[in-house]
Amino acid sequence: MGKRIEVEPGVKLNVEDVGQGDPVVFLHGWPASSRMFEYQAMLLPRHGLRFVGIDFRGFGKSDAPWEGYGYDRMADDVRAVVDALGLERFTLVGFSMGGAIAARYMHRHHEHGAARLMLAGAAVPRFTQTSGFADGTPAQQVDKMLDDAHKDRPAMVEAFGKLFAAKTPSPPFAQWMGSICLESSAHGTVRAMESLRDEDLRQDLPAITVPTALLQGMKDKICPPELAERAHELVRHAELHRFEESGHAMLFDEPAKFNETLLAFAKPDAAVPRL
Image (tube, rainbow, N blue to C red; front, top):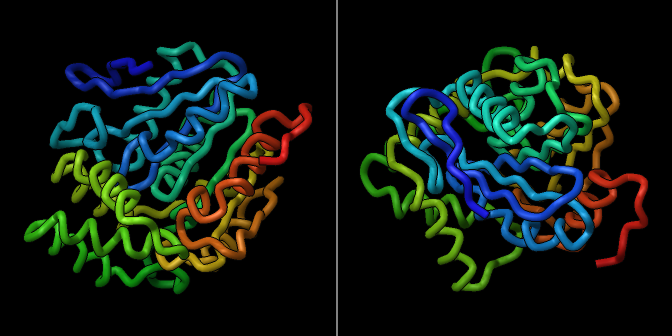
């Protein structure tokens, strides 16, 4: 069930809220929306969990103001949604850019309400290489994507999509994912990518104290496995789950393993079915 939640005057986010039980809040990757988690939205309610998927500002069906695409503001948006829904204890799941914003939320908002944290293919400790950090994507490569986004955004999204999974997707799947990405606003896509290029989570990760699961595709060409290794060094109480046959999108490359890991983490006291 889609809800419109105001996060600052004149800016409302689309939030998909399905099922009942312990909430699991999903933060999507760039440049998609909560629609990328549609299989989890069907799965979790069957297992007594509540799916809450947030479209970031500028993405999906949310409003797209010109400003506010830094991690601080986007983490504040998550807090506004959490408060509006009255969520007091939930599992926070962040994929790719959503993982970076989840980490910022945990630090900036003192883990407010988040009892557990799952970072999947997350853009942490930072997405791009910089002085003293050689494990990310070259910033020049991101600049090329930004330039392409100003000239031919559909082609840029298609090229990015070819890096998304280790397995070759069916043409309908590729079209579906492309449509999700192109539903997002052009300026939101560009400005959030600028934040991906520039933001740094190395001071945020050590502040995380709740049980944390790091999920990493070992064939990831977007957020390479070295990032998860660095995050594992910085986050206390973290367990690293390696997906040997997955690229960036382990939820599509190895969906059964991803979903079993998710259910076991979000509902640790329940028997986890084989999917």
